Length: 302
Image: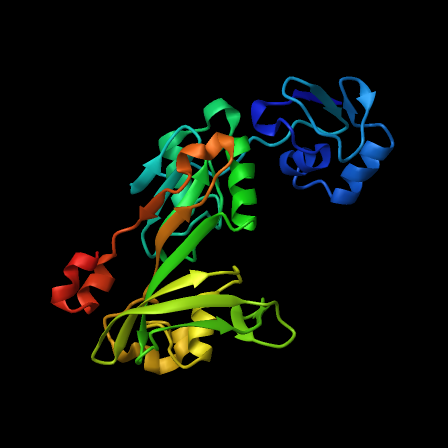
């Protein structure tokens, strides 16, 4: 038997959720069976999978101590846009993974762990991710309560994510793209399909020049590659996005990645632990590849 004490980061969480997080290699069926049989005990007593744990309670389980391996700290700069004791918002550069794909790969999360450690035993954890080649704002929670609160706030639509893109063509002033999307996991491509999940993107044009439009995109839903797939589907592929736009996306030969940037995070009324974020608006400056394509007189947009 192994026994551990519930930390403040897991206060109020369900027993089964905490065990799944600590022992990801143990099948869920085995965890549930151990709880039902009484092999998992909270303060010496049988418990239910949905039992809410409290800080300081002792939990015993029929498995070895959980692995302490987590995201490996990686040296490297972190462009911090906002930080307090609960959370951090970083401006991720294009080309950097949000979180590592292996123990040795560089990532934004690995750099955050190296810089800010594991305060109170809680490893900094990303609340959401961006694709490797998407630049812009990413949130990381620095304690368990904040991770749960931020995740709930995102589900409840209290956190608004807006992206800037450069597309090929003269995009209309504003509109909505309401097309269901399905992802092919084998090819890692998202496509419009009536069998897919509902996906809604709102957009507005900011600037037009030559054969390009700079536009702001708001994700109402959050499907994989949603903005890229939606824009390609209506005939306005993102500059540099050969995967969805084909060769036409190479209209500007210096685009080495899709020109998609997570520009803004806005917060509505946030819960008590995160009340300082209420009505806050965070902006990530435009990256160099955007600035190189935009007309010189628009430099102030950055």
